Image 1 (tube, rainbow, N blue to C red):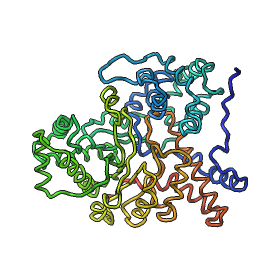
Image 2 (image 1 turned 45 degrees about the horizontal axis):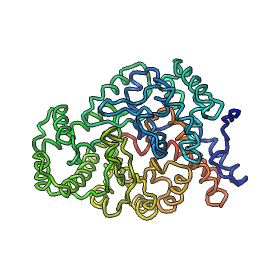
Image 3 (image 1 turned 180 degrees about the vertical axis):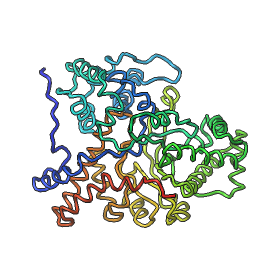
Image 4 (image 1 turned 45 degrees about the vertical axis):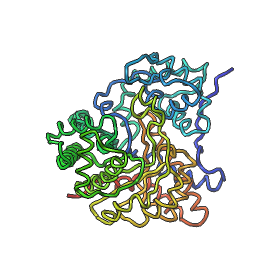
Length: 475
C-alpha cells in the first residue's frame, strides 16, 4: 500500500460555514504567531539546563506522553512494551525503534483525538515528516526524526526559541534545590524557565511517603518540623526559596475542593497524629482541606498565584502505580462541589487584592453551574482554560459556550498545555487558538461583536490575559 501523504489542512478545527470560516481565518492570522505562554507544565528544567540532544524519537514523542501511552494500554499494550520505566528497575523495552514501530502500527487509534492533531503537527512542522505513520513508514519516519534531533538546531534550547516560548513554568517538589533553574539563570541563554511550587505530597497525610517527605522538607528548610508550627514555617521558607528562583505560582491537586479551615489546636493534634502514624482518613481529609486554606493565606501573603485542580482520582489502577510510580496509574475524573468547597477560601480571600487563584476542572458540568458564577463574582478567582481530558476541540468550544455569558472572557487565565511532551507545546497552543478564533468568529457573524473587537479579544486571550493572571505582584 502506498504511503499516505501527511498534509495539514490550514482550515482544520475552524468553522465549516464559509462566511464564518473567513472571519475565523482573519482572527487566527492575528494570533497564530504570538509568543507561547506556558504557565503549567511538566517538562523538567534539567532538559533545558543540560540542553543535551534528545535520546531518540520514541523517548521524545511516545514515552513521556501519557495521552499516547494510555491509549495503547486501553488496547492491551503493556507500559513496559512502550518503554515506560519501572520503579523496581525491572525490564522494559529499551529499543527506541521497536517502541516507535508499535506506535506507528497503532496510529489509527488516535483518529478523532486531540493527540492526533498534536502529533501530526509535531511530525509535519517540527520534523518535516511528509507521510502518515504506519507499519510501512515507521522506520523511515524514525530515521528522519533521529537525523533531526542529532542536529544542534533541534536541541531543547533551540526548539524553545524556535517555538516562540516567552515563558515555561515547570512543576517542582517543595524540597527541590532548583539547581537546574539556577543553572539556566546563570547561563548565557535568555530563555525564561520558572519553577512552580507543588506541595501535594506534604499535605495529604496518608501518602505512604508523607513522613519521609516532611522530614526532608525540614532538612532543606533548616527547620524543626516536629511541630505543626515548624511545618508551616518550613513551607513558608520553601515558598520564599521558589520565589527567589522566579516562581510565579503554586499548584494544588486535591480530590475535592474543600477549603474548610481547622482550629489551630485541631490542626496541631492531627499533625501530631500523622507523625505518630495514627491519623485516620477523616482527619487526613480535614487536614488537606485546611492546608488548601492555609496555602491561600500564604499566597495572599507572598503573592504566588494559587492554581487549584481538584476532582481527580489519582492512580486508579494501584498495581500500575506500584509498578511504575506516580502519574502512571491512570487518573480518572470525579465530580466536585466547588460552591461549598471553595466558599471558606473565597469568603476569606476572594476580594482581597493580595490574593489570586486559578481554578481548573475536568468535570464539564461544573463550568456553567458553579465555576463561571464564582469567577463572575470574586475578583481573586479566574478560570483555568480547559486542560487534560478537556483540551480537545469540542471541549474547548463547550468551555467558551458555558462560561462566557456568565464570567466573560476576562475572568479566565489563558490556555494551559500541561504536558511532559516538550515538542507538542506549540501544537497544543495552536489548537486552543484555532478554537477561540472559531468561537469569536461566530460571535461576529451573530452580530454580538465587531470584527475589530473579536481580534482584540483573541489577542487578549492568547497573550494579555495570561501575562496579567501570572504577573508578579508589585512589592
